[in-house]
Length: 154
Image (tube, rainbow, N blue to C red; front, side, top):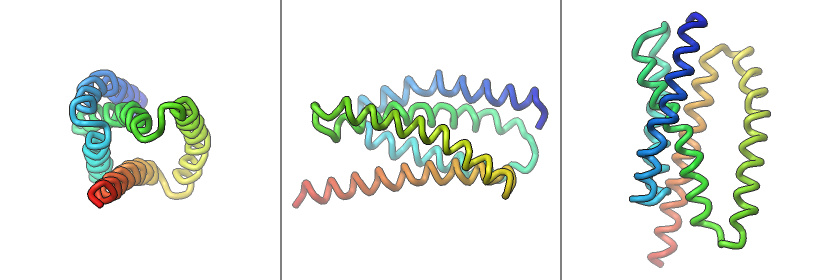
């Protein structure tokens, strides 16, 4: 991959964040953030898994990066909406602050850990981290939905 291709991929990723976040937010308002989080994180995991099949640069990477950019950025807003539904109204400012602090710490230390993994194991470890993060979100929200549904029927 050359610098021009990497720059175009980054632009496509950012365009996906702009154009896909609005419809996903609308779906979150319509169906509830928890259900849309499950769907978006599942799609994100499938897209992350599909990147393993690209050993060389291909034009198919553009739509995949477009969808990944839209799903990652939409997940942040959906997780904030989900969190405000779960905590009490007096705890929302503390929860949002904690969410933002954890996100910033993840941005700092996640970059360091990812860089070390990529140095040791190659570029495919980046895809492994993407896939693992999508699967963690997907499984944790599914667990919460299942646990909450079981608790409300009891």
